[in-house]
Image 1: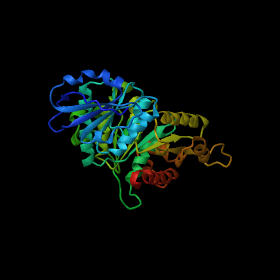
Image 2: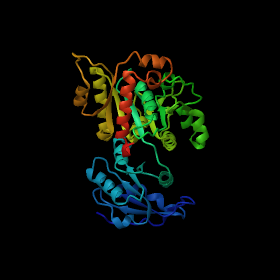
Image 3: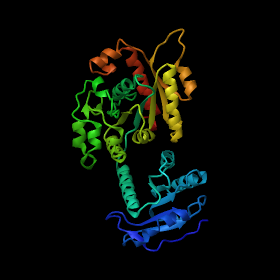
Image 4: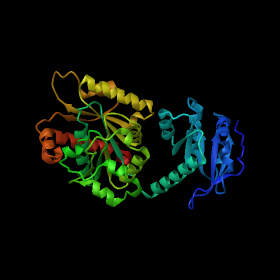
Length: 398
């Protein structure tokens, strides 16, 4: 339709530092559901635009907005195209997607297409107020803060060596790169139920990532420093010492912590748990590079396929995913090779790590990265090559 129907005097106070007009671009049904917003006191104004699901957002209606709320009708590709086109055409205006259902696939799709946040229909003025405040604060912080690239390490099966990969990759990235510059990576163990990263590195942590998540209101550099354990070439934030239920991790708080941590390091390596949850899916969707650790076994490859199917279901681009083949043995009559894994799963293998029991197990028992314990070992050399490939795959060739 494209017709404009201003909402009469729908306003409320947003805060001392943010003021202006929020445009609501909704269908007639959604507009009726929020009809009580006109009783709000003076402050930031709302202006309602009633549009058909396939009607574009009028360009002039976006002029001067502090934010725009655009309905995303599930199952309609034209509605998604409208959202994406508006984001591209008006990058300076924060966009909030409004959804009638809390479908995780639709939420991820909206965020992938550039929405700054998502609200559920029917929404209240307070929900819009909170979302706009958070977005404006987040964009302001982003303008002043460069976020380090994030690398998510995902296991295909238990025992595939994801912790070995994560801990040693952090050490390798901390060594001098090709230009002679050393990064200071941060390893975050988010396997909140069975994380072993601290034990592999001989670390006795004074806190965990869960402590930070529960302290978002007072998190600062001093608190982070008290929980992040510094090692020779990187730092580590451990998993909790006791099993933490997945639903005890509050998504918004976790995302705030991860964002703060990414602003204080050169690269972040996040080891994720084996079981998926809403917060782990949210984190993996925000990673710059996702490393899926597989072994040369039918079981590991089958589980990796399921993981990749899950990524496809939430709209995660395949180009962000790489495979790391661990415990690879070069045998003349080997049934499976790295090339077979790549061809079967349709994802590039970024590195292959040998089964080097003479170096890996003793290093872990000694509480050291393999690069420190046995720097001339086959595993250490392969890990150095993997770190170089990871640097090249990250944004801006980092």
